[in-house]
Structures are given as structure tokens and as C-alpha cells.
Image (cartoon, rainbow, N blue to C red; front, top):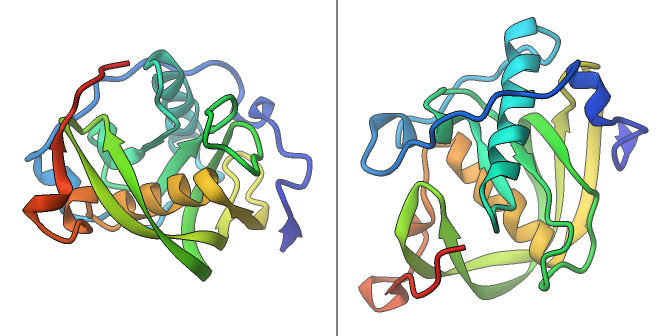
Amino acid sequence: MTGALGGWTLDALGGPGRILPVVTAPAQVLSGGGPEVDPLSDEVVRLAADLVATMRSAPGCVGLAAPQVGVAAQMFAVDVTGHPKSVTLHGTFVLCNAKLVEASRWRLGREGCMSVPDLTGDVKRASRVTVEGVLPGTGQPVRLATDGFEARALQHEIDHCAGLLFLDRVAGAHAIYQRKVYL
């Protein structure tokens, strides 16, 4: 395992991806979870590039998991750069087969999701996490420690890979709100 991203860049994905349509709830792919993937396969590397392109095409989007584009697979893209709630950030990256290995400092925070476009909700998540995963294109295992908003984004995307939406984590109907602003 290497620290941070070990020099990984988007160049490992071999070029720009396609913008894919985003699946919305109650689509079955969002609740089924997905299998682990081979981070060196051409199909996974292409999907990684597509996730980044699709994430970047949506204003305000800071993460996107494979199930959100209709693919049952354990991989996601994240980039919280420029978000006003960001503390620590690692730029744009994609992780395959990611697992949360440490979590602490739990806090309540508001979340939204491209797959649940009309709602937001208050979700309790760890504000300090360590995640292990594998980088697509290189197969390099990484151990990523982060906090704040990036920690929240990673947990949100890992949940997608397990078939969970933020709505599955809210305390009840009183913690769900109609979205007021569409970015």
C-alpha cells in the first residue's frame, strides 16, 4: 500500500471519457450493490474515465459511483476541489474495490445526490476516515486518509457501491428535505 495517490494521475485512464446518463432512484442498480472489479481491465479503465467525465459535466457534483451510471461495480470517482466545505483534498481520483478501514469523529451533515435529484437529507458520517482501494489503470493499492467534506464524499460513494443511498442513512422522514437549489 502506498500513501495518498502515489503519483497516480488521470493519464492512467488513457484519455477523456464519455458523459453517461445518470440513473435515478428507484432504479434497481442503485440498491443491488456491485461486485469487485479488475482495475487493470480495459472495460474498468474506460468506465473510470467515463465516471470522471460524467462527474465533471454536472455542476456541483463531487463524486459519482458506477451504479449511478447503470453499472453494478465497486468503483467511483471523487473530486471535492473548490467545494467550500473542503478541508483536505486529493484532487480528482477514481478508486476500485474501496473499503472504509477507519472512521472517527462522527458528525451530522446535509447530503444530496444526483441519483436522488429532488431531495437532500441529514446524514451522520465520520469526519475522519481511512479508505483502502485500488487505482484503475495501474492496479496500485492505496491507503487514503482524509477528513471533512472529502471524508463524507468517500463514504457516500462507498455506500453507492454497496447498494445504499443517503436516504438509507437518514434518521427518519424529519431529516429529509426538498432540494431548494439545483446546481
